[in-house]
Image (tube, rainbow over all chains, first blue to last red):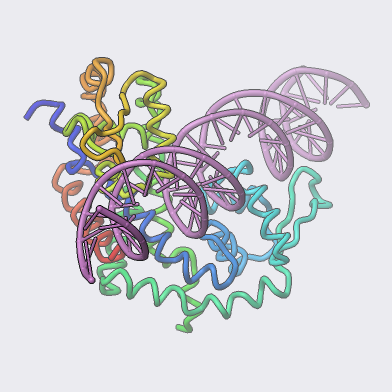
Amino acid sequence: MSPEDFLRLDLQLCFPLYAASRAMVQAYTPLLSKLGLTYPQYLVMLVLWEADGVTVKALGEKLYLDSGTLTPLLKRLETLAFVRRERSTEDARSVLVSLTPQGRALRRKAASIPEAIACRTGLSLEELSRLRRDVLRLFDNVSK
Amino acid sequence: MSPEDFLRLDLQLCFPLYAASRAMVQAYTPLLSKLGLTYPQYLVMLVLWEADGVTVKALGEKLYLDSGTLTPLLKRLETLAFVRRERSTEDARSVLVSLTPQGRALRRKAASIPEAIACRTGLSLEELSRLRRDVLRLFDNVSK
DNA sequence: CCCAATTTAATTGCGCGCAACTGAATCGGG
DNA sequence: CCCGATTCAGTTGCGCGCAATTAAATTGGG
């Protein structure tokens, strides 16, 4: 097998990963559009539902996204009245992002989504958990 | 465990998949930029290296991308002189995409990439193969 | 205390992805 | 042989991702 054989699309890991990631996001999309959210916006809301009042930097560290992505996304969430953004008085360099009552209320409407998606995968909870662990290991290796 | 507990970021499969996919693309980026390609452009080249002279539709079916993504991408590859685009004489609705000599030559320069990436993953060939299989199964389930 | 280095968010520019739509070409039932 | 339905590529619009840069605030060494 020559080195060029490894260029075969069907032998690479990245493409299935890339296709699966997009397919998963597409599975979320109709559920999220009922809430008025995109998938990346939903990820931000997931973080805020666990830890309200975080900085843009902290959001970026959790989601591996930079301010170039987050700033306009957060402005859209602010326009939708799900979050507020305010300069920190402690450190005027940072911006604190916090939930509005509407943003907090959205959590209940989103509660049914994870199970619906888990069903769509056709995998058992054990298989899902194992795959998540394997993909996380891959992520750790590649991103360092 | 209440339904809302499943909203925890660390319990979901999609986010690791999404993060891992982006991290993989970032691992490719410095290697591909030496060739003047982006990752989606590289995917198109992978298809063309296996099957030259395909329609935009066929490319889309292999890569799960539509003309809204492919048309401008192919125009950029054409500007880079890696591909040609021409209306089919058989069926004037379709456009045939084929490699230029430069596009064909690029294959040799890309030959070292898959192994370099495989190393970056830190996984054995068996683990890579198994993970690819699992991710493909997920993709099949979710995308249907 | 000062000022150079660092940190933080915002901005700019570009290339995807994808939904929605357009227009041209082809197909196929009657 | 029509003409309505379908197929195909292209276009438009929008929201990411991310690299590169900017500007403001903070930090910390001397």
